[in-house]
Length: 128
Image (cartoon, one colour):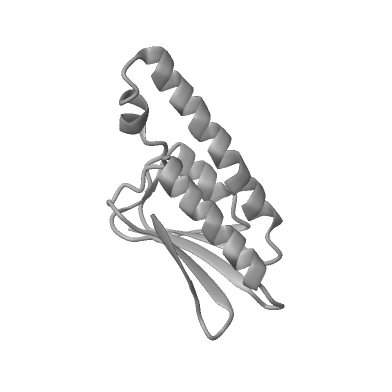
C-alpha cells in the first residue's frame, strides 16, 4: 500500500508502505495509481510530488511470489504480464502530471521498481 500526504507548501509525498520490499502487485500498483490521480486533481501552481518508501528498499520490483501463487508456469506468466499491463498507466500518469516529480530512492530499486523510479522527472539517491 501507499499513502499520499499534502503539506502546506503544496508538496505531495507519496510513500510506499507495508513490507520493506514494496514488491509491485495489483494491490500496490492500484494504490499508487489512485494516489497519483488524487495528486493530479489537487495540484495547483507550484505543486511537487515526491515518491519515497519506508524501510530498507524503495521497491524490489514485481511480486514474483504473487505470480507464482497462480499454481502453474503459464498462469504465473499470465500474472506477470498482467502486472506489466497495470504498471503502464502508472508510468503514463507520472510522466503526465502537471508538476515536477521526484523519486527519493532510499534503498534498492530493482526491475519494476527501477521503472517506477525512472518514470519521475528527477531521481535522488542517498549515498551510503
